[in-house]
Image (cartoon, rainbow, N blue to C red):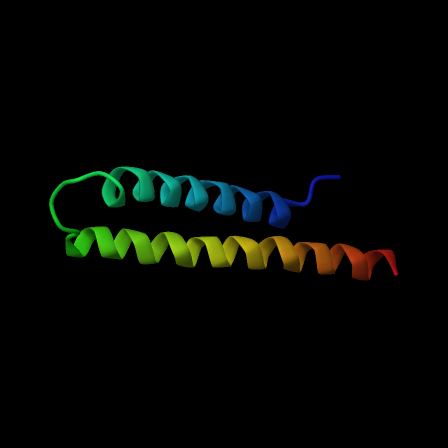
Amino acid sequence: MYNRQKIVGWLLVIASAAYLAYFLRVRVLTPGPLLSGKDWFNLITAFATLIVGVANVRLAAMREQRRRD
């Protein structure tokens, strides 16, 4: 049986980690203009999404463990 909460959590983690890697490589490590307000907003949003995704995965694991007990 598929656990929707766990799948959504992993999707959030993968998407936000991919964006953070892209941001680090393209916007931070290459020369270019200074970071704008939109860049900071996107960075903070990606971190928040990563945290929510990890929490989702952990809560799904705890729920599954409670069901087994």
